[in-house]
Amino acid sequence: MQITFEAAHHFALTVRDSEASAAFYAIFGFKVTLRWAAQDGSLVIVHLSRGDGFILEMFQYEANKERPPARLAIGNDLDEVGVKHIAFRVADVDSGLLDLVADPDAERSARDRMRASRMNH
Image 1 (cartoon, rainbow, N blue to C red):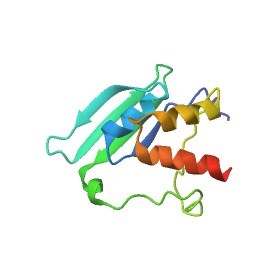
Image 2: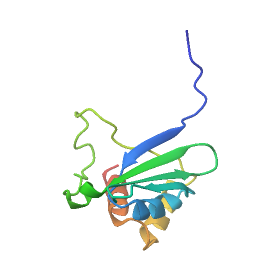
Image 3: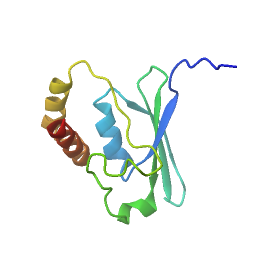
């Protein structure tokens, strides 16, 4: 038996700040399509979509705000089990990078990771 794969449906990730993350992913055309918050403030769930059916599902746990930042070096935990990254195909990576770095509203840590990635490749 073989199941026919049509397209990716969603990708879930945990973020520190769902608003800053949504602003970053807006650069790629994602818009907030669902926002849910627990009454006690412990969890916020945000769905982002581009209209093509693919959803980025973000979880923001209040407890994570005080945790230290993730290790951002390229390939630093590839030997550990778990998802490592998601990649988007863009028409012009160099132009996209310049636009991203020039945008003061883009999430700083994402700009820094992207800049480091380009310098190491």
